[in-house]
Length: 438
Image (cartoon, rainbow, N blue to C red; front, top):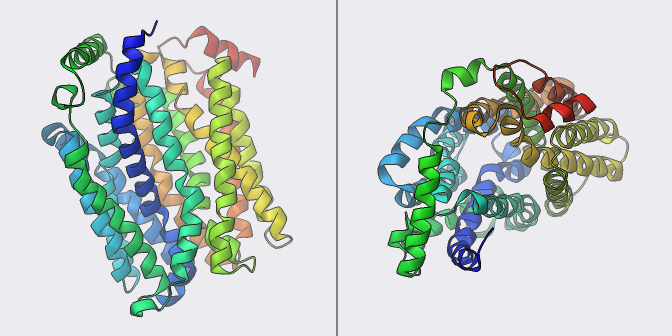
């Protein structure tokens, strides 16, 4: 039972820390995906094909995956506060440098460096949260963190549309204004990190000594209880359940990144102006936030995970397939299809991360989650590259959407298999019953 004192302490911690790291994540998402709007005019200005654009978009994930482990090693030495500050400064600089690219080569290089910069941010925030929030309060804090980050899809389009309208002002192209304006906040937040963040409760002046002692003791007890309960990396890699969940995550990622990096270009191909494209991309983003809230709450309320992942995956795949069919038929139906796709794909993501624990148990899931996340990011490179290549080969976006839609549909069909394989660790009873009912 949560006491009034515990609620008061955690409310104070949440108000001091969660808004800052959540807004930082919002900036992080904007800087990662703003090239999808810059591409509306940048691709023509730099004479880039869809394949070359997909290569540069995906280059971010080469380094993002490669530098995850080194970033965690530096994090352990420097502490989350200083590390997050350095990361935000570096990625802000890389984002603004995107305004200086002149060809495909420089485009790919700067995107690669941006991946290096951002590789440590999410692990850094996750580690930072464990130093401040006991497990029973961490889920809510991370929920706000995710929700604010997801809102980048809603506000990013309109902001980009207005920045594109600045084309020629002070001799700077509209697509360059996107990178200049959206890279600056990261550097400002980097400066604020040292002022607003502290590595541990004992360093916070806004906690009383009694509040600090209680929180430190609570967190220390949890760390002691969790010691030695992680699944070894070698065992996680060979677990059939983890392999299937890894494949599911990769396939869902094709829907996430294939749509995210090309949605503005696809909507513009329907005949809309750059400004209208900025606003219209917000509509599927809103549907995605609704899906995320709906499926995660319904899954938590019922305790059922499998069908709460299967259904949004199928809806996401169907939405992308319909978008491929309607792109050349009706702008209204095409955008409605993208809304269905976003509702499903975004709804699947928060539910997905419950399955490693549901099928393997909490003690064994930690190593598996790390493996899934690392390998799953491969789709961040493969998806935009595939969509760009198919776009150049076919001359339209219909075939690319049909292909990635089929991949997302396949992800939903694979989910039940994860609960049926024998991995040497008994799946919880409710998970086995949920799979049997499927």
